[in-house]
Length: 239
Image (cartoon, rainbow, N blue to C red):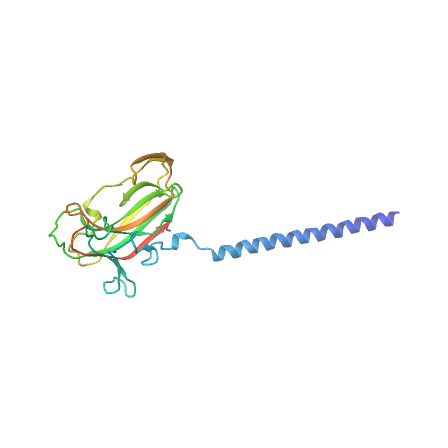
């Protein structure tokens, strides 16, 4: 009887040890898998989300276009610029004379840094308005509801929809000049859609669109002068 008890106890010890080893191996395997996944996953902070031409909508709606890739006027060899030609009333529908990036998903608290190099010819109208030339900006949207929450972020929220002269690379700047937007996506809930001009249910910003534009407070988008945009960058939570 005592012998049988000893054998039973020994068998239980062997079984427990076997189960312990199996569990330890499973845990070790899980840790290795997580480590492996981590090594091949890189931070969005290091990814430029505004590469020309990959991340830009080079066709504006439909009909004749005023957005062109330019391989002759470049800042960095082998990398084309985007050239925006004048809007012509009754011909093209790009009345804002702009080119938009693809929509980029963000969340409140994200730190956004956007940059672009620009150069211009002289104004065809002799425009000397300080709020004229080439510029970049950001639109803030709720891509779930399709609402256009905020627009014209030029440097830092809440500097929205303000035509400030130092946002522009003015007419006649034949050298490349860089402009930068640096802001944090707001946590606020917004109740107004700037595109439709209507009240909306409270929404937070969930996407952004970077845009480049040629504009004049005096002549709008019809100035015969040209502008180029090169080496655009946009980072989320850069290090």
